[in-house]
Amino acid sequence: MDAVIIDSGGANLASLQFAFERLGAKTHVSADPVQITSAERVILPGVGSAADAMSRLRKSGVAELLPTLTQPVLGICLGMQLLFERSEEGDTDCLGILPDKVKRLESAQGRPVPHMGWNQLSPVRGDPLLDGISADEYVYFVHSFAVPVSELTVASADYGIALSAIVRRGNFWGTQFHPERSAKTGARVLANFLRLS
Image 1 (cartoon, one colour):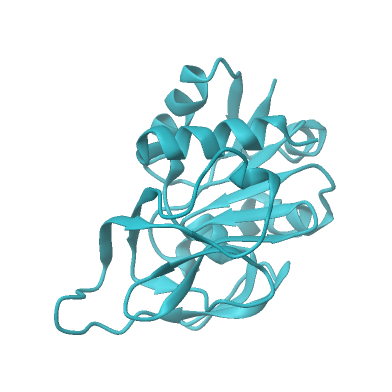
Image 2 (image 1 turned 135 degrees about the vertical axis):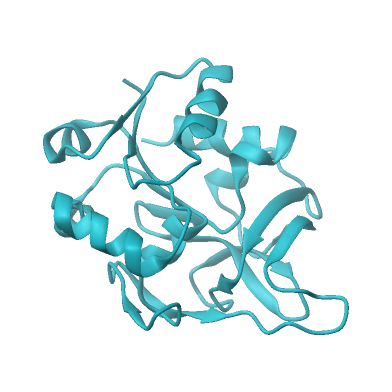
């Protein structure tokens, strides 16, 4: 098994599995702590609200397990946001693996919320997740909350303000965008994740 996708109740589990299958990778969807702990790599997807997702992770025991993992872990969209300490969405306590607070995006003329559609990546620092990806490639976003740019930011995107598009600390990575819906660039991000050890 190349990776375990945590069963977080989101609707994007099948599309994530298909994206990995297209890369020749074997994945398994599970909320079993034993399977997650023994996996080579772990993906934390997320669709829906932070409070609901955290409730599911706590009930399954995965919330306690995740901070202890030592293999590569990738949080996607809401899954990335859950890696942080808190979210303004429902004033929710999250996993606390990454230090910062997830903030609500402010809508403005020409910038509706949710931020939905293609936007450019701006690499901030080198990282294996960005191998073979050049500046200003497009990826697909769907979100109403975001993490400010900080020392954790690997790549940013601009939506009136700079926001974190990819973050990393140690063996934990996160993408605010959906790589499984981001065509060739997203496939490259997932392929790079499969090469991490």
